[in-house]
View (cartoon, rainbow, N blue to C red):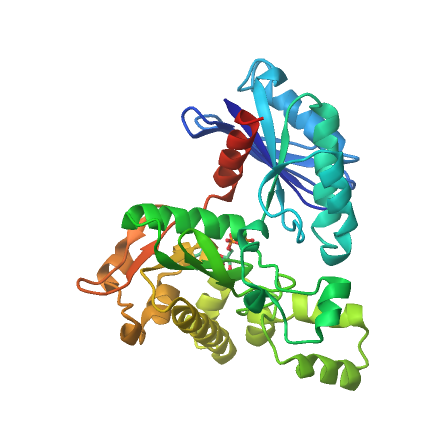
Length: 398
Ligand code: ADP
């Protein structure tokens, strides 16, 4: 069975075609500059990458071009579009109603359109991408996989904010959680490695956007992101959690509008804002190594914040069986893993520094020091494969 996974952004459309019989990726790529001019990078294992600049006036043009490439007599990997059994669509937000991956029909699309107010950045382009794919491939199931759905089982006391309850009822202001597909994937892999489906697991997805999730028995019980992906630890350009009064105070002092304030906290804060160097962890590390104090400070703040959340989730779960690092920073930045785990021996978290310093990139590794109570892993995330798996199981059961 072949499954196409699509992740549509405002001017981009990423795709991967999976052969689910072998679990392999047949082709993947990224259409960029949609609505501007158009650019595509297309990769097939064992072949040279393909680059082109076709016109992409909209998402429909981009997906049409991708299907043309996938079935191209020379470059193609399938003979006919009919070989694609289903399409899995990544959605950042499923609101309160889409609590699990779902085959998307008119009713679900109408609901997704009704919640763009709480998902203004990701919602509209993802819906455009979905509509374009349904037009071009009308006869197969289109499955939505939502980053938020992993958190649909949070207890009310874990997802509500301590503000007047009526405001939650009126605006659905609550913690939704994000990166759920990544956390679900790596927590699932960790539970397999532990041989314990009921395990208590803390997963740290540390990338350009970062979040930490507590999972018990395959279910998320808490997470660091909130109403938006702005909460939690400091990120590339996002502040993460701040005292809310800092926000209103700055608005008053700097005469900022709501939009300007959001921009400040979303695009100019976090590691970039503190270091003044870059939002990219590699650049910050380089500057820190060269003695840049603010770059060193940014990394210390990240470490402190991650440690605090690990500690709080340990408390929430009454212990932990595993700690997992994933995503760009979690998978690659050995120093950060070492700094986060240092001083956590009271919680039973201790890693073998030699293994941490030498484990191969891009592969699962166990960092646990001999005798440590909590097992620590690096598990490369694979959200696209998780989306493909959900899409496969829902289209089979259809
Ligand atoms: P996104 O959230 O956009 O998917 P990624 O998961 O790709 O982001 O993570 C991007 C982050 O990972 C960047 O801050 C980047 O610097 C960091 N990163 C990637 N490789 C390394 C590395 N070798 N060492 C340290 N940080 C790295």
